[in-house]
Image: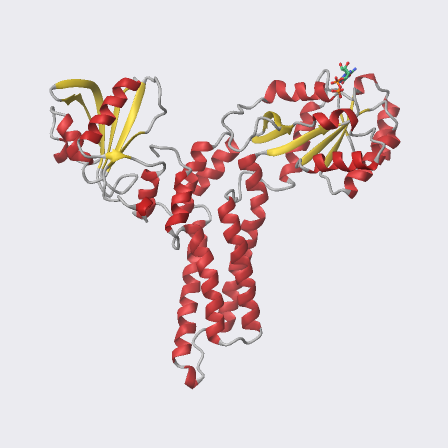
Length: 460
Ligand code: GDP
């Protein structure tokens, strides 16, 4: 395809963010990387230097000094892309960087496309597709949890396991195909019991990965939270208490639209996006007409988690009613009783004993128990899963492919149980192989690759 031409070109890009900095790093990859930089670096013959060496010197062009730089050499295949790579660390003036990049282009390189360094690494077999995608995730990670998940992906994560199972499945599929060659003689080469065991193992792995996606999504995109309750319950006060210590940098987070999201907080490495519930604040509870109630439920349903804040002095019956409605609507919610500083102990006991779920009792104003509320929010999200240990699927593309793998596996198993002819079973297995291969990139199409790598930044 047109997009994918030019793999033999030598490419160049600024790998550090554009703008003024202490230093800037310019990266060059391809067959001409060494000769091009060598032509600009008169003090040493770079081409004859060993790989993984660092050289300090002046960078010249047309007898003019451009900058004093540090040049690092990575010779093929021991480089990020698998090709010859040269990294020039120059002074961080955009003008200097620009001059160097322009000269390198003039000497025969071309500007790299977004993600092209990583795409080359993939094409050279240095990374599989999930690892390449993890590189982008790592760059985008804004929390510790996201960083950890991306690093896990970078180290191979689940793809090593999937690859191994896929290989075993390939063996079975070739045995099945062999049976087809001997179809007259009614022989079976592929042990059906073993095949079923393998399918079961694959199904278990697939299911575990699929169910990790919920958490993966949370890690990557955060959890949307709506704080609802009657006027004066203390919603704004609670919002401020939560924000005080946990405010996250919002601009960096992909997919957060400023108009619907008010604030983002980071609690124990998980991002909570406090969604704008302006419409709910005034009338969520006092709705009289049915239409209004429906509408406010709809808004609440858009949130992953609803915090229902009430004044502990309010009638317990009201809270009960709300919780009943919310449960019927399938909302995930926490009941939070506020202003305990003003309440008597018997009143608080009454809440705890009469409500269907034990409420968290806080005083938003002086932050009493707000830390317990934060813990409860995290617990609600993780629901028993550990953030640290398991491999989690954070990528929507992997999730969709895994869903297809699960379906294909189920069909294959059913086929075997029903004594389906070998050729049909082989077909089903090929479907499994197809989807498994798509995850790790063993099977890809160019458009898909272009799409994946176009989301990277230039220079990566
Ligand atoms: P909203 O209408 O739900 O956003 O409620 P606000 O956050 O504006 O709070 C309403 C009133 O309750 C304000 O005067 C707050 O200072 C007060 N308030 C909020 N939280 C507490 C609390 O924990 N204890 C006490 N005593 N007052 C509180």
